[in-house]
Image 1: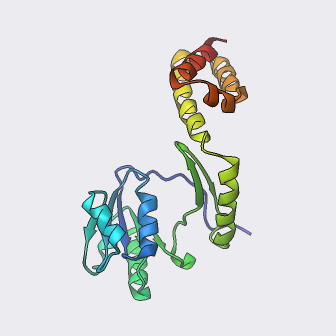
Image 2: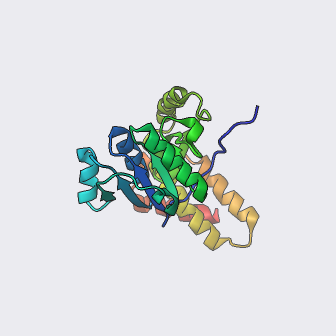
Image 3: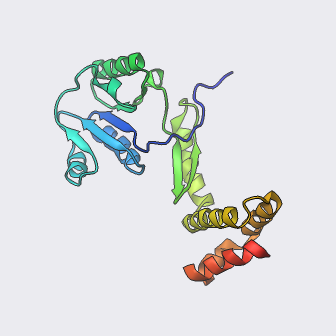
Length: 212
């Protein structure tokens, strides 16, 4: 049987985003989006204090008013988390008419996308999803992944990003050399490297792998 949702990494860079609703469910989605580079507007009559806090910090644009149809169609990415089903349905219909991606929280029938359970380690993101059918399972598996990818993976991810830039600059036209360099990176004992070496020493190690 075909699945509904295709796993994708979607850039929110420069994309205008809208969250309709101001409760704790909306807050969780807002704080997820704030981890990424986006322009976020929240429309809510009575937002919870933490949403007000994010607005005071300049992290979101907060408009304390009712949703005004068909405004969702002017955005590039929309989440509706109102406790009013009629509002959620209106937001969904406005987005569909305008061809805008929309998620109505806890209503898979009115979602163009869902949020997977994610473990983030710097630029490394590991996500698991059940196609919206059993989110409690993906939530459990996120805890499993937390143990598989402990905190030191953030440093590994940072070093991998740095090393790729060095390799591409040093060997732009030699795929065999690039693969050999990447192999040395992957074979390294990163747990010991992070424990025993400072940042400058790790950079020296990366440069050594470029040539050996």
